[in-house]
Length: 221
Ligand SMILES: [Zn+2]
Image (cartoon, rainbow, N blue to C red; front, side, top):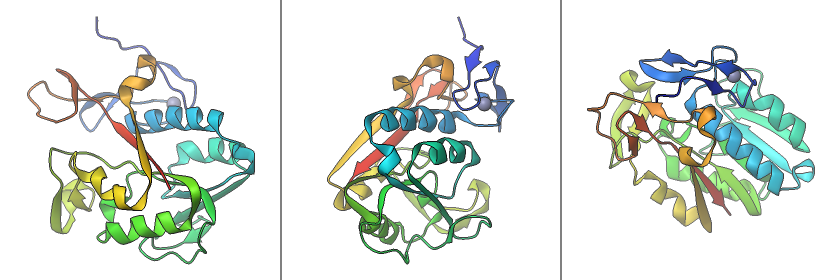
């Protein structure tokens, strides 16, 4: 039986999710969150349960609105950052950050690094501003087996400068001591964190004929 009754962990909506860009069961009709937001939201709540977050400082890069309230409520210090967005606490470039070493306990940047040409500089900077033992949550969209770099930002892919492959997270290794991966399979099915696709679509992270799982890398400094 195909499940079509879901529960949104972000806004507590219960019911059917709607299609988004051709992907079935993708978007919550109430808060508009997508598959990846629900996965990251549930993972974040698991991490919050394990950490003394009231005494921790988090930097939220390119902040998705779904997370702001939850993070502000749980962390002692919440700061947002983006290179262009207005209304953030810091208008900064991740490739060169104006913050001192070891300033933050957590850095969260979802679907950001695929927009940054010099992603290794950004990773180095993220690691630098994290205190030892701090963690960075840095998921990107995985498109295929191998990472492909574009010469120019690709307008057909939201101006991404690369199509990250399954090998992409290997780039994180020099900057962190440990990477723990969380998958769509690890959260309740009713939260719906799979990307639905055509059965003929080839992808290295196929979970079923019509589903692709997603991956959230949590990197420990
Ligand atoms: Zn929702």
